[in-house]
Image 1: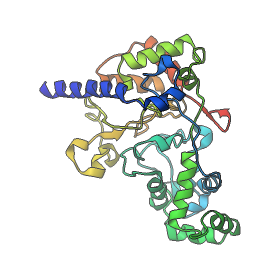
Image 2 (image 1 turned 90 degrees about the vertical axis):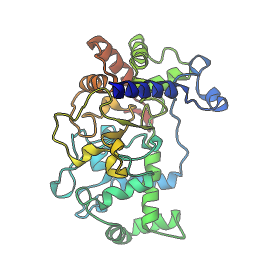
Image 3 (image 1 turned 45 degrees about the horizontal axis):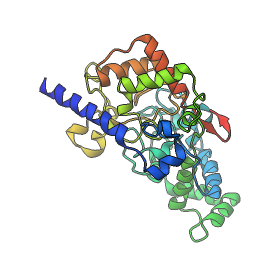
Image 4 (image 1 turned 180 degrees about the vertical axis):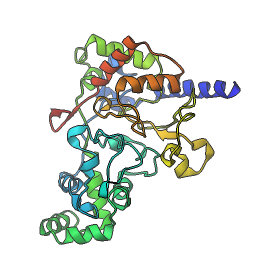
Length: 330
């Protein structure tokens, strides 16, 4: 009982802190209407990145030669046409091998405090190297990849133009991919326009959904620019989510990185900017619908039951978070 009280205190304290973490006035003054200055969610802006690196990184991101058998590219699991995912419970790597976790969206990933569900990569550069070397995913290594790319005259010229002192190296390879990934920001969503003062950018149902999103406590973990992605949280604060499940190593979450028992079942909170596009949900891809995901979160994270009508309002709000990429709404 005492543990439950402490956990609840921690959770609601996190909710209070989340609503207090705001940008400086000078930054906020330019990006919010005065009416929405104190909102826990912040609007996205177009990133400032090197367009030449972005173009090179885009090409690499879609190149299957990064895999051992030339069959899998980064885009195979993170399709830009599917919200930055593959909409599969778990992705397939080379030779049809099944991955351990659900592929998270690559859009807006530059706003995450770390990469992968368990946060084992602290930067996008570090993350870009991971799948290349993972035997289940791309099953390759930098030596093989660089040999392939060095045989392509166009790649050699591009790398030389952008990185004249280095050319094609492991460092320039991941730098280009990471720069491209930082460019994948979904700007000008209806909700962001609402935050900037366009009161009619979202409708009454979406506004009600946002109110409920805050009232029920969802915003305690899902706030900031990416509506999540900026903290870790235990999956199962109010009840044991894993009690009746056959555990896998992926279920250990942060414990696999830190080795600390208190990090078991702790995961990076996913951003919700494109949640309506990125089913199935959770690290194991076990939940097919957004309605089911919300109900699961309500039970295991909030200790509550949310009425069906309120769930529908919240889903309407989540739809308003979907922004644009290259001038088109995703």
